[in-house]
Length: 275
Ligand code: HPA
Image (cartoon, rainbow, N blue to C red; front, side, top):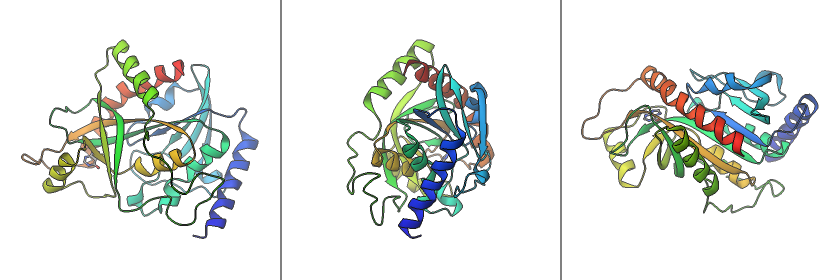
């Protein structure tokens, strides 16, 4: 798609939302597969369907809704993205990250991203959230390819601190105080839609990946390009042990996402309160 057209589409959606919402959220939260629970904690929610926002893509993945939820979480006005766009659905990287540009241009300053991921770290157990300390982009694509929109961010964005160190520290402190077990680690993003082969899990482990999934990386790249601070969580829904690989289904992933998701929701809620 022509970049000028894309910029116009983004601006239109931003105008539409600015006229609808009572306040500008400083925090945006992206809910991953099976992690919609946090939406219930929003007070006085104002729900806007993607299909009603001009130019907005529409989501199709199982376990994903398609709406933005604006409202208060502990007196902080936030926006939740309930249902994200995945590259494997056939969306371009520009579509996948369309909502992140909207958040940036609305004035959001902090992006909290969540996902369901396979654990590749030998010490990981299913059902525990991992705070993302960094990522590796193995998706074979990048949302910033093509002409740079200079008003949105620099041609060569810095990625030395893709995930904000202070936010990681806060999340760790909160988890500890709440008595919730968390891991820390590197998220590897692949295009999907197939789950990984044993050889791929082995490779992910070798290159320093603790968890693997099919999302998040494009959103974080665009958020950093746009100057947002990022905090990320992976719900470890299964373990990819290359030496003892068991068949994996999407149903199993969603079931286990629910468990880690509850812990994650508690942490995120308290992190937001302290921001
Ligand atoms: N790969 C392996 N396991 C997973 C994934 C993935 O992409 N997502 C959730 N569990």
